[in-house]
Image 1 (cartoon, rainbow, N blue to C red):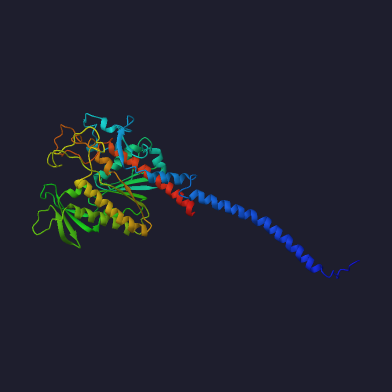
Image 2 (cartoon, rainbow, N blue to C red; image 1 turned 30 degrees about the vertical axis):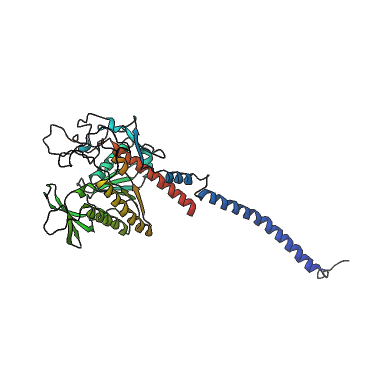
Length: 425
């Protein structure tokens, strides 16, 4: 039967719709099923990449390994390859820490490295450090031991590049150095008490000065300067053994061995705790500071047979083993105060997205009574009155291991950032 253009079979309309619908469904299924399959596989890939327990994730493995290994607990082991610079090859060594120049007769103290109990700690790699710190900045905030650390780092970096002095002042207590090839800036801020302080009496009861400490006031010399830095290493301790008068809310509240009438002796620990609390509070109060704060813990001195100003000295020529000494007395108390105040600051900083880390040098340096300048910080013939130095560290010397610690910490920070980028990117 011939059909005209305007004629259809009685059931043609329904038949045509069913046919079209079937074709459409088939095409949709053929398109969607592969997409769903790929999405499922991609989701599984992301899970396996970012999962902390995934054996296929190098970032997770590195983090897990670092979590399992405390790099700050270990022993000093011989390192015949050290030192990696000399007193003649590095101009950054402070004269009072230039032990070999001034006649120290033994050199064995330079040939040790730190070996963590549960893993290995790589020797400092200057090229790797500078690559990690490209376009970044690092500030040392504290006393002359902090400067000692910075000068050690400059010497360790010297085989790759020496920095250019870009200091904004002639004051040696506030230095800035720039590694131009890497656009890396390093600075030191002298603040022996970390907070606002002033000399009250140049002699004091011990003839070593009496210092006024304003325990609730920031030291503007560094707190107004660190906004721009990516990392700050804060430290302090040895200056708190000297006589001090404590101020809070602009009035005297007590002191440490000030021997002033009607002033309560609160002890050095009171001022030490308040100083770190105020310094950390200053950092957390900065609106524009986005960097990482690193607490470098207290490095014990090693005076024997007398106090630092009463003939004490440090004449040992080898490290202690960990079972030959222990952290106790002042050293333990100062360390515990630092860690307690650090945890408070870290908890508060976390609310603001701030990063706090610990560079724990206390145990390692407790074991190094052999690493100090003693009397080898000047010529024996010089007509000077200097105490035996059992606080600072010879360069080269055991303080160089602090850069081993620092570089390992920076590498772990990079791994964490990469992992977080995969997880949340």
